Image (cartoon, rainbow, N blue to C red; front, side, top):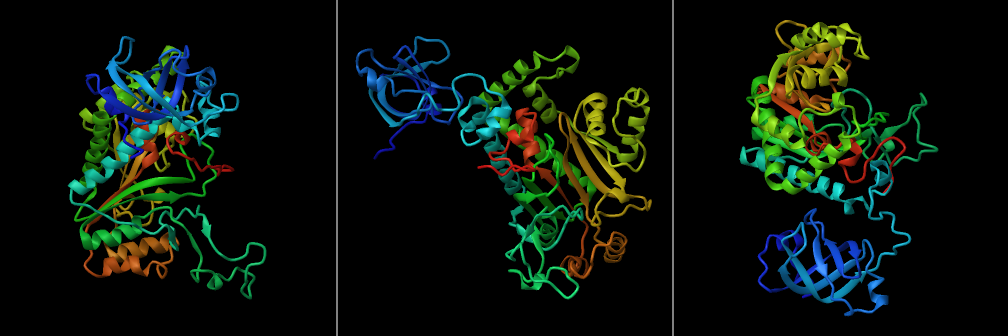
Length: 478
């Protein structure tokens, strides 16, 4: 069998007893025609392979270049060098794939994140990105484990849909009609009855509405899938294609919802800390090095791991939207006109406002509830004051909003009335309204943008660096 190999992560934790082992991986560096730093992606740590001088001719050794792939069979021995406890004395080295040293884009030196985005097909091979994507995997696995262990069912909601759950209209159209000459009605509008689905369809912005259908029968469901926003935002916080986690639970109110979200966030962060210690330590050090160039006032008070521990070990602060606005209005930041955007009751808080509450005022994650109904979606439960809805956002240090959710409006008459106010066509959502006609129950749910969560846990400053192949305005490479 060709692939009788031991992964480097496992090998580095093995005691050297002179046993023969086989490893495969890519060359990170090759020094003195003798010492190969080999990495196979299982860990950020390299395995040192020692090649006996004179064993191979120069022509062969010249092929051991950065990113060439090797199969090495040898003896596992204790290492005399610093940084590793074991190394492999090579008995047989086979080059599985050459890498032209002259044209390979990622030479063994420090590259900017902007440069690496242009080489997204190769950036997995760097320490930074291999760490980020191992952490991403752990967080994704923890999502499923958390909900499974709490009795939630994983529901696959449609990616192609005719409904706009958010009502924002920023959707990607899905069509097989010819762009240059689509069929048209008498009034000149496009005749979608001739399209593949017989109507106008789009890529989903959220699985929530369909998720509610599942929750009102199965009790507790969650979705975890790709969502799409045709929002022309070229920022470090926005993607056109991203992954969303959306639990929905029957017999839940806003308080139950907030408690679930807090427990969920703490659980998945804790899982990554327990299973990706080396990666998080590398990313912590990377951030510290990055901050050395900043003035002392702009440096984080906590390092990456301290920040994660703080979130895991402390209860989140809970305040109402009205209380949040009062805090902002009373702040020196507001009085000294340091906010770019104005503060008053009724605004949709900007990232700078959210970050002030989290990073300057409370210095911990904050759950904000009971937002003005005018700035929230039609499906959120209306509060008795007639002005606010039972909505909640969770704000996290560094990125602002990380979770958005609400108790859903389960009262049929109230929901229909709100849909009319917001010009949401009730006839198109007849199936959604049926859940309020037939055995309606209080229920609630939230959405968590997975990439923002990965950003928070890894400390990466740009959301494009936590998804393998970012989709942003004017960018669909790879």
